[in-house]
Image (cartoon, rainbow, N blue to C red; front, side, top):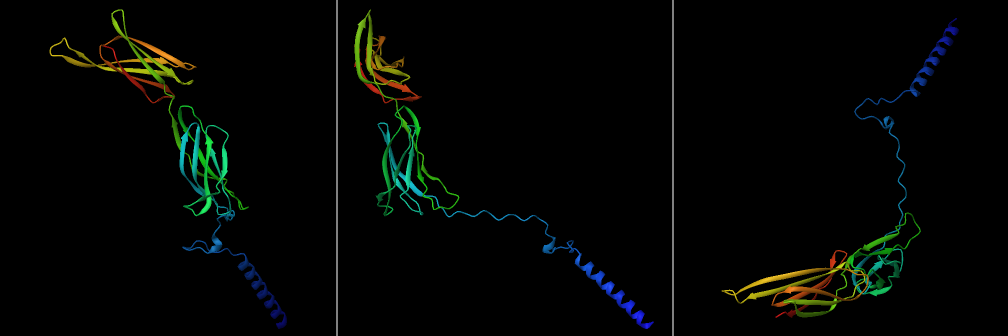
Length: 263
């Protein structure tokens, strides 16, 4: 009888231990504390960032440029830590783009990284822009930067001015006249403007007076070139100063000037 009771007690204790062990394995950590344990962090895990390529942008500078006669000349330097020579591209509004290697000796950099070349550019009157970029020398990694901008300057082309001014004073029907003749050298002008100015003295008045006079004529543009004449009447007896300009794309050409006496 005593042996049976001992066996039953052992089974009861074993069963109790088994329950306790199972309860310990299923227990949740206590997260309702000022500093919860790491097991309480249920936020999603962020994926690692993508690998960063080792390729580097080329560097350089547009050190000087000049526009003239339908072309832009650029000079500067460009280099790339991955190798070279770097290819330099110039894009104007007169395609196609031009690309040349930066392989000239550059004293300031102490290396063969210089460039200097000429590319066609628009000769039409107006404000124009061109851009210079250095093309990347890849090292085989990603991402690969394609180009590095060096500069995007602007230049202005003035309208073609008139030329060969001829001033002819005359007298017609009791009035002084003035013929202003010039050569139209442009095929794209919007028009021409002629400005006259003079100082007129009235000796018959007492005391004699001097007054400033002016006149203006606007001539529409034409699709051709050649000699153009504008006839002014009722001119004063004075020395007349004449200014002729062409207009195009909202710009004004250099002035063609002259003077003549109508006395």
